[in-house]
Length: 407
Image (cartoon, rainbow, N blue to C red; front, side, top):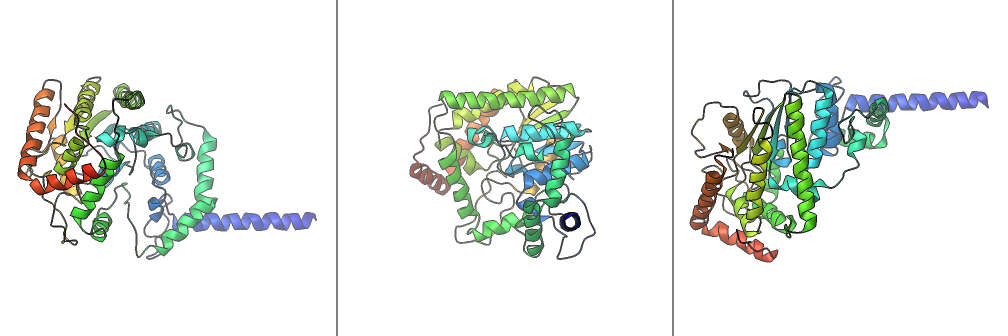
């Protein structure tokens, strides 16, 4: 019996070693950097299934000096290798679908890893949506810090390592990564940046930029909060704003430069927010951001690129042209890296090439009122000159029962 148990234990150990070797070699989350074999493990496609895990592993390994935080708008548009970002290594820690609560957890994780000196936080109103900020228990299985930012103990680190080497989940992701090397859904490079070419191809499969835009606008009109005066919404909004204030205070305490960027949303998205009755909330949100940035004005700057301007009002191709590619946007929700580069140029004070006049400005208490008025005027002018776009969005608003609120 003892010999049988010894053989069984040996077999189990060999099986575990083989499984760990397989997962380490395939490396679906880009953590171990094994020798690469074309068509086998060149691309870490586990990112497609578990970006929360893959990006937490990258933070632990890289200990970045600069991180870029945001949702899907930021993960493909803001390049950590942009020449204006001098504090290296830099990592794109943006995560599709994230709310501010999740971004706060990853900010704390990067802070605890050591070396963090600069944060670029890409903002839009959806980050404050209660639906995006519900508790996510999976974070406690992938992060090495708890909700307060304290190290959760060595046991969690070993448990995470055991998961990425021995779990059935990782083995499944490894096999999926092998079988999709020639047809990846998306690719994340080693700096955390999501390559936009695959998302542009997805837009073409959806019928082109106009149809894809109407899909994302439908999501805005169907899914964004309706009763923003309710006690539950106000409570959730206040809690999310407090998390942003905490991030600002921690940045000030640790001498971290924090650049807050309101993303360059398309004019159609601006109008969708208006007809959804969210414009008063949108402006109040910007007032709250300005006030929050003043908690540490020597280290925190707030930039707003969301107004209607030459590039953010890019015309959508005709509905019949499914293969067309827009210059500045994939569709009306997601801007492309070429526009993200110009945003970073502006924020970091690089020379303006003049291609996108009127793109972005720094928001401060003294400039806020004029900026909001100018944005209202620019949107009104766009509405007056884009009858077809207006009709499409108003048709969607009627379909989803959205009505404009008085300002």
